[in-house]
Length: 426
Length: 145
Ligand SMILES: NC(=O)C1=CN([C@@H]2O[C@H](COP(=O)(O)OP(=O)(O)OC[C@H]3O[C@@H](n4cnc5c(N)ncnc54)[C@H](O)[C@@H]3O)[C@@H](O)[C@H]2O)C=CC1
Ligand SMILES: Cc1cc2nc3c(=O)[nH]c(=O)nc-3n(C[C@H](O)[C@H](O)[C@H](O)COP(=O)(O)O)c2cc1C
Ligand code: SF4
Ligand code: FES
Image (cartoon, rainbow over all chains, first blue to last red; front, side, top):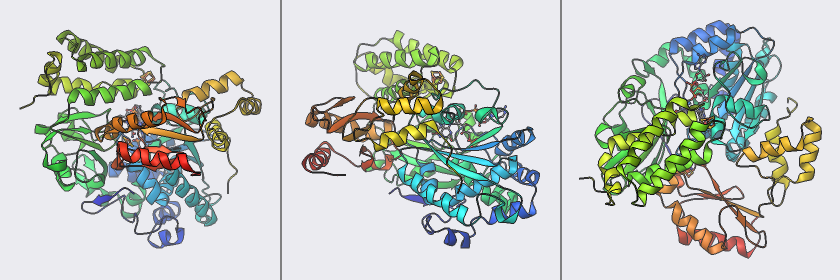
């Protein structure tokens, strides 16, 4: 079982593990579905959207798109059918936050999903969970069945004229299927290759119908925003980045697990809360936002986790993943592992990514084996820039991130490899 | 409760779960093709896209190893080598008796227990080369279903 810690007042993990997720009555007693009841009985869909916009909630799947705006775009579309698709594909190495929400607070996610449906005028939600998350799927299935039994899902919820159904569809393990349009292709029973954007899903989504695709954690914020109000939500975090963020911690760190913190804590503080670098070693770097994210060097960790500050080092909180590397780690070995991952997961639809990941792997292997040249480093940089610009979807665009930054930030180490030497920082 | 929708990937996963050797046999593919009005080649092409789906027999015990960064940092490579050594197979191979099949998987979200493997979806974490061999020995001996 994965441990978790909460710093300050939690939004997401409030009742997690205190109340059995299998007991809907206890969940309701503790306030679950209160926000839904309030929305359906006292608020119009527009009111709900206004409240979400006011809260400044941004997508927790990585890209940080304003959630209220996304709802508004989908609500504006005229259509006989609209969908809410919950993105529980979670494939970023080192990430397990959505898994914990689905396992420990399935009703929180269901409530958030119905709220999203009410806001945009959808009558159907589909929760996509990767098939490996067996416990999460089991808990969600039971929670959905219980919600139907209590009249919280199905026809005329709480006696209002709003009806909403939720089904679960399992994903078959392709990382790229976390990309929202690839996810929609998968739901339609096809190969999970990304679609061209625009049109974005709020305009043309599942089966061509207006669809909002949201991350699990994003939706799990909605009940709080509706029941406590956007103003309360704005009290969390700092200017421009409100609410809390879940962080999955792994790598060379004393305590591994999930942390919920308000935006504005520094990366350094987060590491300290988790007991620091393992075995008293020195920090080398932090991989923030997963292997598609940012490499934060040891001398940069005093930076606050929020959209603005991280923007300064061209980063973002991403999906909230922190992989810690201690001083003994070889940057070439780390980036080799990362690039192998992307080579395996590239879907093959476009050449910059399918060929680029292969070339980058070959170059890294060569350098690691001591047969590389400085020319190879230049090639790596050139291919990385090309992939970022020309790849069809976010996978190829972000795949070279850590590699490219490692050459900027740990150049000496790369050069040492090129010259046949070994890891020799300080 | 709402009537279940037809989702192809979900159907394929179900068929595979019912199969002893963790794959989707040809007769089932023909059935699905008929049901959906698609060609069998099309269904094969969908199956080939998804890492969890297979149209070729695997093994009674499907061993999946994660080698992504958090597992890699905790010594996944040594664990993989120990498995390969002990069973005498490489990735994408089964033992001659079809009892074990070895494949890679991407991160399983179990990174706090890295390195991790799954045997028929049962996770084994915090592994070392010695520990993983102990686990495999248990499966060799009797039935672990
Ligand atoms: N959670 C995880 O496991 C993983 C997360 N990621 C994250 O995914 C991110 C990239 O995701 P993408 O979806 O490619 O980013 P994106 O920027 O294309 O889209 C983000 C969201 O905003 C919406 N959006 C953007 N512009 C819009 C517009 N003009 N109108 C309507 N909607 C609009 C999109 O529909 C989408 O829901 C990366 O930042 C990365 O951090 C990547 C890999 C794995
Ligand atoms: C390769 C790739 C993989 C992704 N994987 C996920 C994922 O596992 N979960 C997720 O919520 N978003 C993932 N995303 C981001 C989604 O495309 C999309 O931005 C997100 O689901 C929108 O939800 P949000 O606005 O609530 O963050 C991925 C993006 C890319 C490019
Ligand atoms: S960038 Fe990579 S994953 Fe995305 S469409 Fe191109 S080949 Fe597929
Ligand atoms: S990296 Fe292996 S389970 Fe996450």
